[in-house]
Image 1 (cartoon, protein in one colour):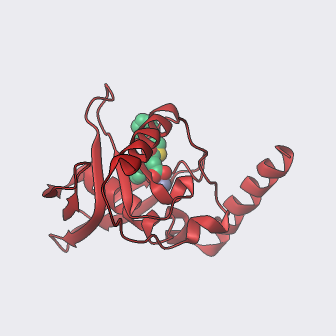
Image 2 (cartoon, rainbow, N blue to C red):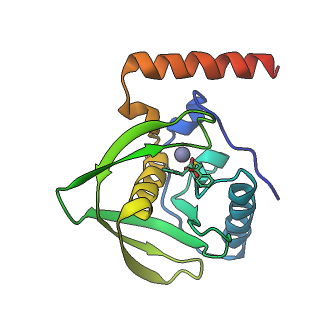
Image 3 (tube, rainbow, N blue to C red):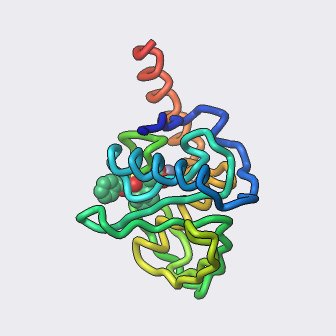
Length: 167
Ligand SMILES: O=C(O)C[C@@H](Cc1ccccc1)C(=O)SCC(=O)c1ccccc1
Ligand SMILES: [Zn+2]
């Protein structure tokens, strides 16, 4: 089922997610609902925080044909270089706004997959940007936290206005 995506400045987006205890069928149902929600948005990533479930779970799919799904459970990240890379980031929880964010250019991710098996990937380019953006969600952080307060307040005012008009 399609889930509702929380939108900035909803305070629930600031919740710090807890580790997943058991990788079971209930979790896999949530994973499938998150993929359905992400593809419908459309987006290339989605953190459980964004659908108001505060556990360390991320889904991603950077492919054109929506056929390369990736699941990261209890992910750990290690920067592999001092080099930073900028990217014009968007966020399904901050719809309509894009801001340049600079992050480590290459990272290693250790996580569990949807069967509970441990795996490790090295990421660069958009994969590195996106996984770091998703992991921020699990820490209650948003990409608007990296821009000036002035810009962040402008974005907050605009989205609050839209949410008021939606009733
Ligand atoms: O809010 C999210 O976490 C999803 C976000 C992930 C992300 C994208 C780009 C840079 C950093 C993080 C999105 O998917 S925003 C939508 C988007 O970027 C996109 C949508 C359709 C096709 C390709 C990209
Ligand atoms: Zn986001």
